[in-house]
Image 1 (cartoon, helix red, strand yellow):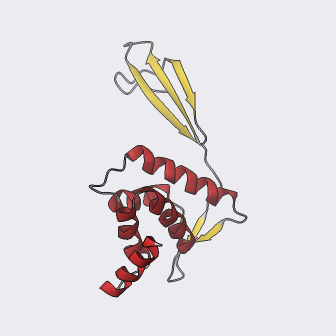
Image 2 (cartoon, rainbow, N blue to C red):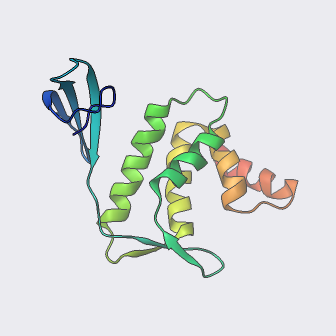
Amino acid sequence: MQCPYCRKSETKVVDKRNSENEIRRRRECLSCAKRFTTQERVKWLDICVMKRDGAKEPYSREKIIKGMQLACEKRPVTAEKINLIADCIEASIRKRKGTEIKSSIIGDMVMKKLMALDQVAYMRFASVCKSFDNPKEFEQEIKLLKK
């Protein structure tokens, strides 16, 4: 591991924290004595996402997070909550059989989590995910939320 400050490769691990999909290590450079954090994520088998138009693309956790961040913009939702939702969705995807998943299934998972978290963020995300074309579709979705 190379120190980001002095670029020397002699470091020691000061602290280590494990989470479900990640290991964080607090390191100290033996040369300049500065500390920094590194993260390790488990590399899973490649999952392929099938889009509505039939195209396929690699699964991207960052894409899910970005979509939720846009939906939650100016809402009382922390980045930590968004990351926890992304962790939960990713775990659900990994538990499925096979390496392909439809984008609509991922969208449904995100919408379900956002509905429980923030209904305005849910509506924002749903309007894109379900491709709302007119105000009537918003009204129908709001009626479903009220139930």
